[in-house]
Length: 328
Image (cartoon, rainbow, N blue to C red; front, side, top):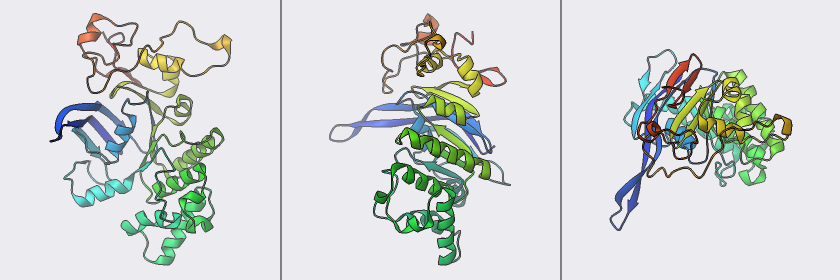
């Protein structure tokens, strides 16, 4: 196991007035728990605003969690909890082992810095290279690894296409040979023709380096093809976890079923009729409903759903779901 996420919450305060007093909170994550192992890919899906990106940024330590625990297993060492006051040596190693690829390749690179310097920075911070020559050779190897020419090192981000910029972002993420990469919508800002190239590159790199991926995406088809497990989120909550085959063949949570139906299917004979459809808009994360967070949009809602929040429960060896319909 590389990482264990245990009941992580993340609330963002809402500041109002001249004295910026806290008037409420945006509840972005609600007690999210899961584990990820070497070489494993966990896909995270859900509507915009469900907490997918916030989860990735809490794990990457861009944000500190409001509550809950994050456990990291360093190689050949005992598991440690990653907190704001964790020993600096451990935290530095954690940041080295857990990298992130951001959604927008246009904004994730500094326009004032050459690509070579961008890739060299993490190598210098962690003192990977002992000389300037070794550093330049490492940068060249990284560019070749992601399908770019070493000569590109002297260029600036604006001289590249979106797909090339995302390749550069991937090169930066793998520079320190991390054990895990958080992929936050890595293909959503790219043309369809380029998306498959980036996905294939990520899969090849994972096979070579045995990295784990937390793969965040709106695209269910992409998540199906890259994931070992899929985690479905709604309003900051994990509502279902399953293998891709089980999730697509037999979604158990009404929200998951509605997401499956939203996948375009151009063959009228194969369209599934009578399935759950999403009604209305998600509730505000500032004032989420009591009970099951999905009950305001669920066609199978019961009185129990309105007052009692279902727990994410194991219903089989490879399946977890948070729904009163499935867990009496």
